[in-house]
Length: 151
Image (cartoon, rainbow, N blue to C red; front, side, top):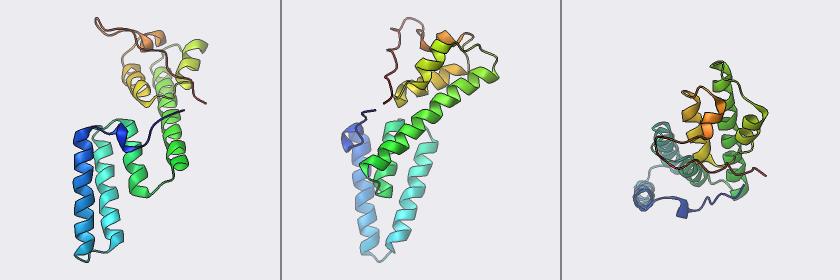
């Protein structure tokens, strides 16, 4: 999987907000707030953001990596695990709903490593009546691209 976890994956508005958070963090530390308290507050803030689903999963991964001081390899492993969890959730939802999952659909979902695609599949898993419809079209839109293979 080749996912850019650098700040380029963040939109300009989010980069500005992060810049503001960094300045606030530095200011708090300059005022004598213990560094761990500042870090704990930042982690709580990032957790709250991730629960709102207002950020892409790539952005959440990037933010958690920055807040936790993760290495690129650790962040990539976390993102891979998140993608795998989404794939399993898609298949489990279909199974619980009694939707037949063919070997082809199983393979396409489990080989997908793109978090945006997996999020779309997860959302569709709640309403499709046939597993193949996960990859179909929405009222007049172009078909989804093939999910990328994991590596």
